[in-house]
Image (cartoon, rainbow over all chains, first blue to last red; front, side, top):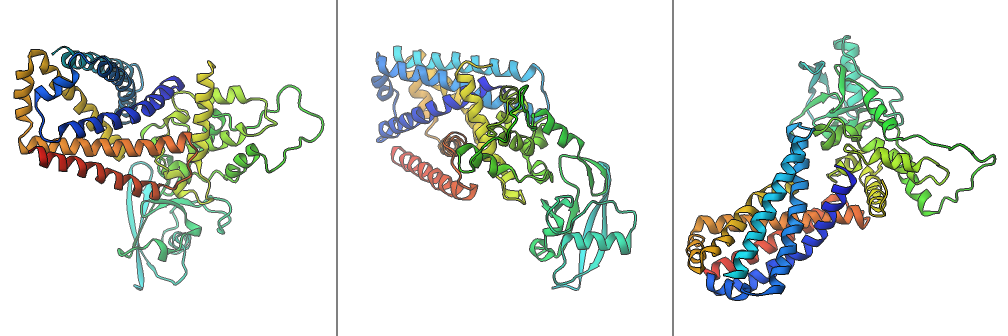
Amino acid sequence: MNPILFAAQRITAFALAFAVVVHLGTVLYAVRGGLTAADVLARTHGNVGFALFYGLFVIAVAIHAPIGLRNILREWSGLHGRTPDLALALFALTLLVLGFRAVFAVYTS
Amino acid sequence: MTATLNVEVWRGTERGQFQSFAIPRREHQTVLDVVSEIQRQHDATLSYRFACRVGMCGSCAMVVNGRPRWTCRTRVNEVIGGSESLRIEPLRNFKIVRDLAVEMTQFFDKWKQARGFFEPGPNPENDFAVVPPQTGERQAADEGIECIGCGVCYSACDVVAWDNDYLGPAALNRAWTLVNDVRDRGQAARLDAISGNDGCQACHTHMSCTKFCPKAIAPTFSIAGLKRAVVRRALRGGP
Amino acid sequence: MLHRLSGIALAIFLPLHFLALATALNGANALDSFLALTRQPLVKFAEAGIVVALAIHFTLGLRVLAIEFLGFREKTLTALSICTTAVFAVGFVFLLNLGWSG
């Protein structure tokens, strides 16, 4: 792992620690009494603040998770060359695309 | 306390097998006593290392019942557990020379790779440097300075087991003591050396090194210091 | 090791979570029918597992950050006990919620 990846992973870790607490708190509060699509979408529809928060959340995760997985790949599969880097980039892209799509979905529906 | 001890000793190199011996149990015997007795009374072909036998040199380090330790400082009673048997192997993560003796070259090469040596610079001072022992840097250096290169931490480290190129806790701990040496002039090169792919970032803070170090050094915290130094430099736009 | 395994679990879960939310693209009804699936006991159990994995990863991550950047000197044992307690606390809360919403 080089210093930039390391710093990025640790900094996003701090950011995620905060975001996760907020997210869990919100979900646990909102879900009391049952969870329906209408409830969720009522809160998220057209809510810019919401979309911004979760957009940033997605970016932080897309940085944090792939770096950790790259380490695991390098250490447990013995592959040291470009393969783990490619896997990292691919997974980051997947998270970004799926994440933004989900944020968009609950914002517009 | 049973009358005899069942001892399994690794024989061979990476390919080999355990050989069993029955050794009389004695009240204060150490694992080194047991190994020596095997070699002198039972099988003269057993290879192992020791020197001072009083816990100062670190030569007798081996893995006893799964844990890396100094065998001269390990009483059989301490490690025997309920099984009443001993399993003795060479240190993990080293190439095996033979039986219980391991090849230390790579371990010390990594010290060099991590620039774990003092760099006086092109114009060393003529007089002695004054370094008050209470300064933060000197205290940080002193916490790790007692390392005698026994290899126990290297054996305990999971990351070395998973990535044989990882510099390892001892080399990085030594680098940290030099990062804190105010007389040293090779800091930039040293930070480069310990921040590559196999440098301090690879440490996952499992703390096995700290748990097993016989000199109570905590390489984990030295490595944490290196991580902070590296991140600080990266954020300031350094290399 | 727990930290690593819980991280893997989360990394597998997250894309699924994103896909689930994105079913709303097909309208609120689509999301509702998906949510109906989640009322099954097996799913609830898996969800609880994910929350526990998150609590583990989160608390052990805080431990790593504390040692690396706040210069914490806690020997692992104490830190682990605190982590474990926090883990169960969060899992418990979630399970309670699961019970209520049925």
